[in-house]
Each structure stands twice: as structure tokens, then as C-alpha cells.
Figure 1 (spheres, one colour):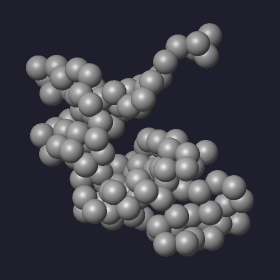
Figure 2 (cartoon, one colour):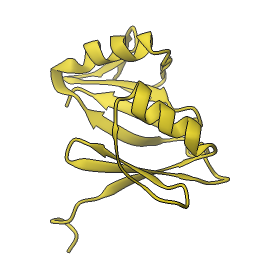
Figure 3 (cartoon, rainbow, N blue to C red):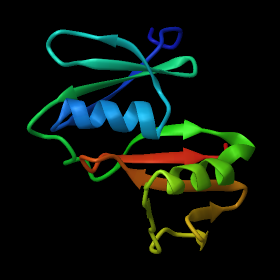
Figure 4 (cartoon, rainbow, N blue to C red):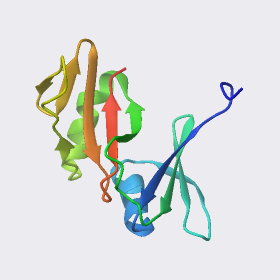
Length: 126
């Protein structure tokens, strides 16, 4: 039923101005639409990310959005570090080791970081 339709990731934030700066300037996403009520939609590859203000911003304790970056994983991590992004380390994941900021589980390599509101985002080599 929905398999042929595009999906949009939605992220709640406390301060749309700060979030817009982070997603545009730090992550390099391009604004696709910004409504008068403060909702900003970013273009990311063939997908979209909608950011909106909510009192529940940052309360999700799981990954909210993931970017599949292939072989660019390490260079993107370095670029984000230079822009002040701190990466999260999860040392209790089963069958996973960590090399620096990258968690390795077989052929899968993942790095997690947070936006200014605490939304958990990730990069994967997949």
C-alpha cells in the first residue's frame, strides 16, 4: 500500500532558528520549504527531513534519522567534528566494537551524534 510512496523523517526541536542553522550550516542540508508556522523541510538526497517546534523535542531515546553515506563515513565524521559535532559512544551494543567514533558490527559501520535538541542522528556505511 505505501511501498511506492516517499516517506519523510520528522524531528521535533525546541528552537527552529537554532535547528535550521544546525541542519543547514553544520550538516549541509538545503531548505526545500519553510512555512510561516515555523516548519522547515530540508532536502537530503532523494528524501526529506521535516523539522518543527515541539515541547517534546529531544525526548526520543532512539535514532531519529540515519544517513547512508557509504565509503564517505570517515571523512564525513572528520568534517562534522571540525564543525563541533560530538559523537556518541555506545559500548554496550551486542557483537559491536568501537574504533574511535565508529561502531563496527560485521561489515556495518555506524556513528551516532545529536542535534542541538538531543535528537539522535546517525551515519552508516551501508
